[in-house]
Image 1 (cartoon, rainbow, N blue to C red):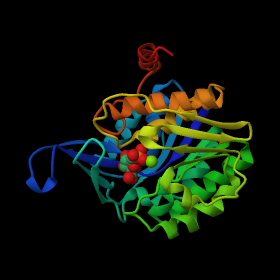
Image 2 (cartoon, rainbow, N blue to C red):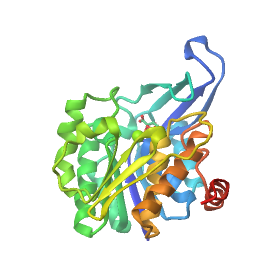
Image 3 (cartoon, protein in one colour):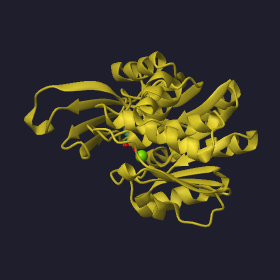
Image 4 (cartoon, rainbow, N blue to C red):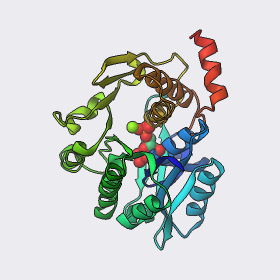
Length: 297
Ligand code: CKP
Ligand code: MG
């Protein structure tokens, strides 16, 4: 049984205390938008499968081992190319400079076959994809299309986060790749500045717009809801979007109302921004209850 299937590239991540040009120490961990979502959903007790390609190297082992430890089922395969790397250079709580070393990486070799194998294992309730994977390579983009199509045929709910990355492609390229998928998407997630990439009039049943520190809005056929962000001291906002998605998808799986889904999304995001790192601070159910106690809801 799989609640959420997601696919993408997860990299080795170095996080420095300041500018990399000064040298010094950096912490080694992993990062990737889709695996952030996978970890978040798994910590809330759902069954998650992540599909990706890693290199036959130590960083690839780190990726697979970390996801395994987080109780994410790891699909995909290894390939004879290096596992991608990402360098995080924190400048302020809100600004983290990102440097990628991911071109021609193992992760960019993701293919339709990897996705087909995942569906052979089990049909997920939700398929979650992001624009980042579409930007990696032709074969990775085809893999995303395959996931959307197979999910649609199998009756899974298909979720797409625009996740625009200007270091990977232009807004025009992103729009050309993402818009054709949107007629088969049940849930579109975008930040305010990504809405133009998605365009409109796709007839998507559920659209969620993230407003950063101002919370998020859900638009469904039943109406429109907005939830404020929880007030916490932000130390690192990278991964906040993915954390929100993890909470929102968890709410969907639990049959929560749109307002309840938004509430869970903003609560999970609050934990993410209060802790350094993309995924380390993601909450369990017990942690979530603490936040509700504190806010009195
Ligand atoms: O939109 P978010 O800040 O939640 O995403 C952060 C992730 O996948 C981060 O883990 C990084 O590896 C990336 O987005 C990326 O490829 O930029
Ligand atoms: Mg994002």
